[in-house]
Image (cartoon, rainbow over all chains, first blue to last red; front, side):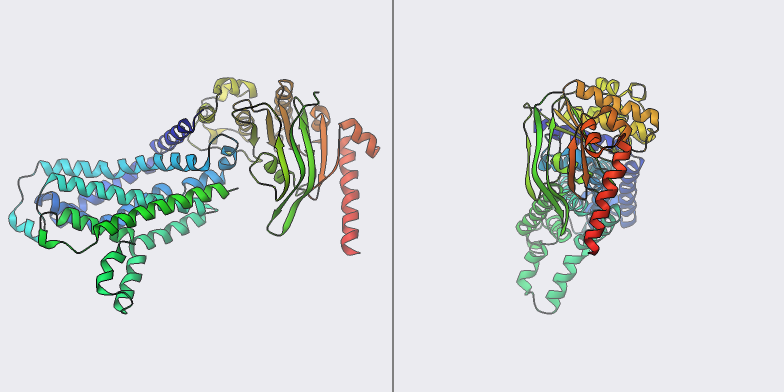
Length: 272
Length: 240
């Protein structure tokens, strides 16, 4: 039996677990309702694709990691608590394959939870008449479905990075209670913690002006925001760039992903 | 009983932090035999089984597998077998048989759970869950199967059934290593018994050899004699 087959088996188990969970459907419905509510409240629903992205960006900085944490924070902890990790050690399933299978399964579920509502919103936007130029101006963007797709892709990347962090939390936690505590800490760090530290550093002069945009890429939320700003919102305005460092932001997200996946594998390897 | 050793531990020790839980244990299990680890609570049985199963690494000494090449060399059932909720007994075994070759239906038959195949694991009784745990431990027909207290918490009938499953496994050539407090069943089904106390194996032999050594008429009496005696010596040593 190949390791590939083992990974596939683990992916399927995660998907079946979630497909049988009412909470998962509640999560998808929650994402959809929050997104639609934000859109209509902000006026982006009538204005077009980019205004919709503008309206969704800020709430998604919190909503996406919250969904990722909800999907991932107990994944490994529960298997460890049930003794299933011990049992799996007697099967030809190396720790990295277990982590890959579990993560990939949850990632597919996260993809459905984020892309599904965004796709429905995109469909709705496609039925609307062209935006009013005045509204476009207030939302600072040009309109194109491609830009909305790009926003969706970046949102998914942000979700996958925060899911990796949530999975790492579940591998480090030794009980459900500690998993919850660590998940809340991780969520706070991702959404606001690093930004606040950097802004504090900037305010006290410890961080120079020209360093700030690059250093903000160390925060997943800021990296996501920066990438959306630079590649979606200001895509058509040559003069409206430089608010973030897209290269550093992409690297920042990749480093968070690689680091947290590594931590998860190490956590599963030492679990007993 | 064959003399072929399939798993052996040589002078293994294991510590949790500064606490030495196992101390220089040497033990071998043979193909087609049942070896029972017997000892009071907290004597180190579970830790020893986990080290032998490869879940924990010994801090000293080595564990060697000498059996035939197999996709899964050692099967293991933890003390409290637990499974992912929301899946039926058959689906649970199908998951494990997807990791190594095996047929979930024949495994359910083997442990007498065929009629409960479509019952969700959270709806299984404690005994049925333990039987499902034994079925899981035998997925892929590992040459060595390690069961941590397979009879614990079961009614006498279910306990008898569990040990009969164990005896059948051994008769098919599997080396079974288990821990138990049930001396009657250990006497009936075990080919070899290892008495363990305070992290050390104090005696090993067939049930009859142990009875002769300790000059007891039953293993229950032997249990009380052997462990009470050793404990008293230990306590005297501590306070001396």
